[in-house]
Length: 361
Image (cartoon, rainbow, N blue to C red):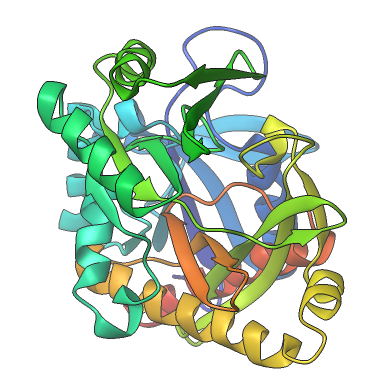
């Protein structure tokens, strides 16, 4: 850190083929960070994992609206944006992160979080535990079938979710109504439904859908509706320039017509959190919003205590028909928020947190 100037390195993986940017990840985000960083006297560079493992460091910086590859000094702070779970587990990425650690450079958002492990950690916090839907790792064969049977006896709706899923990928919804069961899932973004009277046959369908992929089984929550659609909340929590957690913004995602997830790639749409809270809970909107924020901050602190240094995370949360707040998922590599104000603030927060880390070295 020379004077007040900070160098922020974004850790990612080199693109080996195809068109577009020479590296993988959220390229649009990296451009915004570079552009905004210049105004804040923060140099943003994109670092491929293989270069971190070399004797001299090279990476990309933004010059005249294009990415230029050049030799670089070691950054003051590294923001881990490896965007693929399989790559994150690779030996080269692990070695790169270890090299950064050995040089005493702070690295934030160290890894992806797996759903089954995450819920075990969150259960250890009494303030969070009561807001978690019943969740377990889904077993194989007879064990998995018996788990599904036990969950359906206790809950009207059950979700099966991949441990490594994102954006609604691979989610299966099962519910029973007046003696008939219904299993819904996505096939190439097309929603499909299978009705059954025998749970054994439903379990056979589940096995075909999930294959060898690891899954969790989770209690379904009866959600309220807004303008005829189910909805939940997306909450972005970030560290600010003082290194303290804060809620950057709350968005609402409405499920598409007849859909069982609210993710935009699966037919969901965005809506104003203020508008929805006022419409559905006109007498309690302030209290519910405050409870969502307080729970999100407590979850962020718990996750960081368990997994290492984080600068941001997003959460999927909901409020049921009785006004109880639930936490469904925590995303350690947040996707883009479509709300412009949240998106702008998120860029500023990442950069100011990087400055905070650099100044504390």
